[in-house]
Length: 352
View 1 (cartoon, helix red, strand yellow):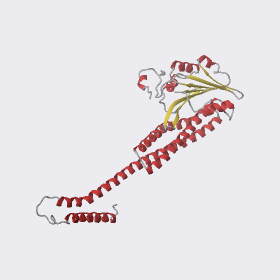
View 2: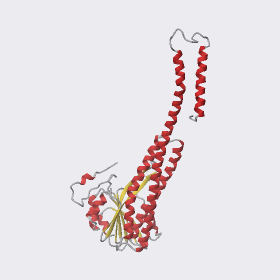
View 3: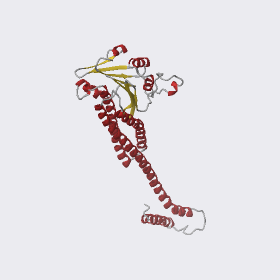
View 4: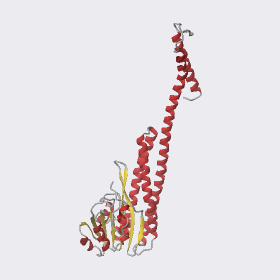
């Protein structure tokens, strides 16, 4: 996995644009969706000059930048939209906690977007930064590909309120889609936990334990991302800012409720995973105890038999029954009787 260490920024002045993240940086691809109540236009652009004509055209412009490798291009976008250098620095440092920063002319929201790979059952994440201004929304992603296609479809078809509302509503839609995707991931993890429960009861293996530890790590990753997001959304819905309308605040309250539900699910699944790990360890210990119990019983039964064979294996000339022709069969009968007597005693004591 690609990782650029934070130490590369050591000694640089505040606001220096250096990409710090786990995903390999890719060249920027800029997608613009420009719309109003009647029309919409979606396209990709290659130069910053093409972007400027959509800056103040009385429409709502959603500008989605995928890829953070071209810091010069990102710096040019930041200058055109008067973005603070510290904001740009936070955008490139992709290990940020979810937060909401308030500026005079725009709002800056940063959070994590998750993807669940069903084939390998792993969670991948990337940081997404959202800038909400008057008549525009800027979204910055680490890599191409996202979960915003339903929003693009709603803008294209004119369904819902999105083309009738301001940029703050578009920002809410992006946030709501990311939070709703958390539910999809939680459902997938829940299904996996149900399968592991059956496996745990029937035939737990070392692979079962590895799966449980992987789920536990995923829960920690989700918890680390969603808990600060709750604080950011709470601040968002209580914010008194000229860019946030009262109607959007009502919708933000709904997103906050969804975030609380996600947190509850995370805590529930964490407890389930921890409990299942304990059950696995207990079952393995129980199996070991059962094995040791069987071996102990076998060893205990053979102790007197070994004594008898050892006694009659001594090379003395004068021993009882040494020359008796039925001595061998008598010894076998005695050993069999001892074994049966001990087995009967163990069963009465309920040791076996």
